[in-house]
Length: 135
Image (tube, rainbow, N blue to C red; front, top):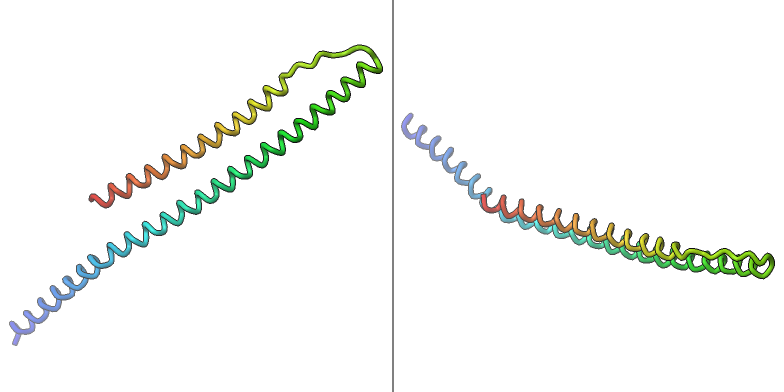
């Protein structure tokens, strides 16, 4: 009777272990799939955010150009007025044009840097994922 109870206890223990291992084997692929889906959703959301930011930056650049043109027109009108009324004409340096170009270029470079940072982040994340899968 003791031998039979001992065998029953051992069989129950090993059966429970087999059941747990089987559950883990079945759950791991599901968990990996769910995780990859969540990561894909996060990546898509981040790309949508970047697109929104890019659109906003383009709109800001367009508005800045419009304001710059208006300001230049005002300066020209003022200069023309000064020439007509006072005769002392200042030659304007077109440095403002270069500043605007520089600002636009800087904004473009910053966007590129952010995009590269994000792409590096995704690469590192992908490498870590592959490394974990290989282990």
